[in-house]
Image (cartoon, rainbow, N blue to C red; front, side, top):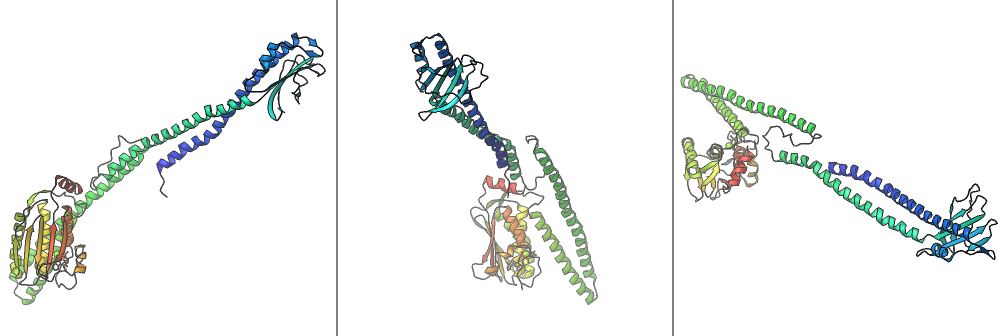
Length: 466
Ligand SMILES: Nc1ncnc2c1ncn2[C@@H]1O[C@H](COP(=O)(O)OP(=O)(O)OP(=O)(O)O)[C@@H](O)[C@H]1O
Ligand SMILES: [Mg+2]
């Protein structure tokens, strides 16, 4: 499974944040509730103190305390909750209040007066928070005050909306910031990807390290070190091809010269025959070497970029055809040239395109029998070689452009490289090469089509082979 750095970072940053959010929010909520409870308990305590003070100053009439009206109003008036109170004498007899509050279950005996005991009870099915407060440790006067929990519960739900909802908003904001931050943090990697994606396969310069984060730097250094090593391998391969070409061509040329000299002086028929054979082998060897080198030169990774210049196909093809006339005569083939077309100017590397056309003419002269007719023709951004020889069976037409692919039974020497080379060169020009049956029904027609020469095309062609 492919791991996403972005997802991993988000998971490890947001995961703990969310995991802490739940207990954190609960803690805030409980602390809020506690503060609320303390504040309301305090207010209850103030009421009890007021009642106690009023009770101490009041007179007993028929076993009931006569409390000032004002104090009853203050203590009992509450817009949200029912308030209850009871005042008991030293014997626990009710001397004022409603008597609805029971005594706390755990009334501390060491209560030394004025220390409130808070407790919870239920009156008429409603939860009530109450406190008991005595004047002295012997409870000579005891005040019980209680209130239902309505406003406490209302405020608790306010705590939720006032604390928890902002918390959720903060966490969402934090998540958005984390995502944005991760995106920003990974941006240099995207830059690096683009730099690599737009790089030519031959560009072995080290990657720019200036704008790269320190964490990625070691990776980049390794890539750069790999590039340096690859670059030296490429260089040595280029040198090898160059050296091999030189090393092979020179002795082959020497061999051919020596054979020619020996042939001119040979007086024994056997010697002449042997020399004839050697001459053939030498020519073929020379051809193989040239074809292999041509393929290496024109293959992807070639060390020389094509030199694209405006080229008039008429002049160009006429010149190349002329160079083959002598060979055609030797073979008894009628080699002709037909110019034509309005748009005959294309952007091309003349030397390379020459190699492509050479291979097509070479094939036509090689595979057609004597008295055949071969025509090199220029059209509207097209170049073709037509012959009336054996032709190419339809099922073989795609494969003959493959390297080392030859048709059986032609009875001619060859390496199966000529058309592969021609195809490489045509593709380098962003053109196409196809083969079909010649119009007369006999023979083959090889057709090269060039694209319209826009400046962008010229630029990108040069880019591919940079
Ligand atoms: N004009 C043609 N007429 C008939 N057959 C052809 C023609 N041109 C090419 N072929 C066939 O296509 C095959 C591939 O041609 P290609 O030029 O790639 O290789 P080759 O001529 O065999 O070797 P090389 O060109 O490397 O010396 C040839 O072997 C031949 O059978
Ligand atoms: Mg060939």
